[in-house]
Every structure is written in structure tokens, then in C-alpha cells.
Image 1 (cartoon, rainbow, N blue to C red):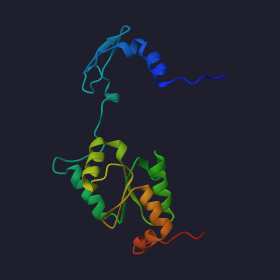
Image 2: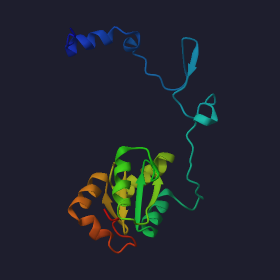
Image 3: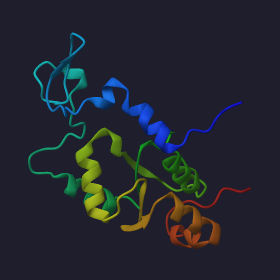
Image 4: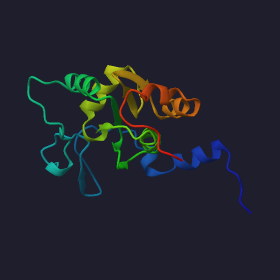
Length: 170
């Protein structure tokens, strides 16, 4: 029969492991068991495939803030999400896309996983910490929970009525 461990017993057991006894915080390259590890992305021994990259191509004159402002201004429905509408990479993003697709409206999206600077710019623009983030007619509406709630109480249908498209028949 299984025995429940108290939190003290569990912590004592964990503290006996060699990794838990190490008081060394490592920043930069280090060696362990003959292998070199690195915690610094700019380490010259880090292969290019594993270095952070800037996937949003921008000129020196265009900032991520400008990109977000332009996206929100030019697209009636804009969603910043994890993944893309045809392949969401998070359940909340998937839910938001399913709700919005119900209305058969043009949907513009950007994958925030492609660039950490884009993700930060969107958070700064909306003053909202989580994703997905949905903008309708230039206004920040919220995330998947808010969109779902608006759909269920009819507010979303009203907000989207001026945008070409209509609810799909059931």
C-alpha cells in the first residue's frame, strides 16, 4: 500500500541528492562530468542554431512598438498568439481562434513565440501580461476568457457586426 510522505520527509530526501547540495550558482560556461555547458546565449561555443534570433525583419527606422501600432490600426481583428491560427501552440490561443472563426471574419495574427522583443512590445502596448491578446477595431479587448464570455453573452457578435462576415449557421 502506498504511503504518503510528509513535506518534511520529501524535502529531506531531496536535500540528500548531489545536485541539491551544490551551492554554486553558475553563470557562463561550466564543466560537469567532462562536458561543457553554457548558460550564456552569446557564448562563442554555442552553435548558431541555438542562439536567439530576431525573426521579425525590421529596418532601423521601424521599432516593434511601431509594428504593433500598425498591426492594430490596419487590421479589424488582430490576435497576438502562441502559434498561428491554423496551428495554435497553446490551448488559450486555440480557444480564441475557434471563437473568432465562428464569426467568419478576416483574422490577422502574429506568433509571439518567434520573437521575444515582439512579445514585450505587445505587452507594453496593451498593458496586459498574458497571451493571446485580441484587438478589435483598434481596441484591446482581452484574452481567450474574455472573448469566450463576450461570445456567450452576445457582446462579441455586436462588436464584430461591422466587420465583413457573419456567424456560421449551426
